[in-house]
Amino acid sequence: MRTTRVTVAALVAAAALALTACGSDTGKSTSLAEVNAPAKSKPGTVLDRPFDKPDLVLTDTNGKPWSLREQTKGKPTLIYFGYTKCPDVCPLTMSNIAVAKKALPKDDQDKLQVVFVTTDPDRDTPESLGQWLKSQDPSFIGLTGDFAKIQAGARSLGIGIEAAKKEANGDIVSMHGAQVIAFSPKTDEGYVLYGESTTVEDYTKDLPKIIKGENP
Image (cartoon, rainbow, N blue to C red; front, side, top):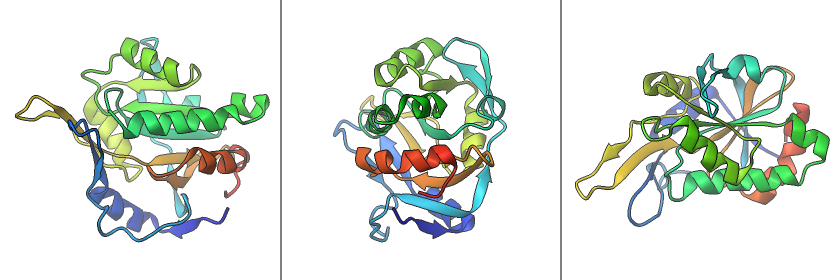
């Protein structure tokens, strides 16, 4: 599958606009960059200057410290920032990855690390996060912790997130970038980015190469 190459500077600028609003009573997501975004036929964006893996130490679903950099070192890793009470984009994204992962050979399934970092740590406790991810794939890693630390880690990857806010009607809305970033087992750098429109079929085609650290 041929992918699009972009500069990191362009990616960060686009990500600043591409926050997704989750939690509205319509159940639909709204991308602020949707109207002006160019048509894109390929899901994967290969970065010409990959991202360093954030030096994030958060709390896993067992309530223990978990170092993103150290515990995914040398492993093909997908990282996504979202929250469990999201009505649409977050569960769909994780479900798509889970289905595609199950299509891999067992050895490759065991190699792939999928990390979900909550953008709503006030509500996503280790226990609730663990229960939610178990319904997606028990092997998925869930992380929660201090919001400012999570926000800084996301920003280092060009992903914007904002603290959850309660609207006048009582709805709680969280704004967050909906990108999935793939990290190479060869370099430990984030080198491929996927948007929220990436399908099960897209992940199924690309994951075998991601696991090898190749360009999809």
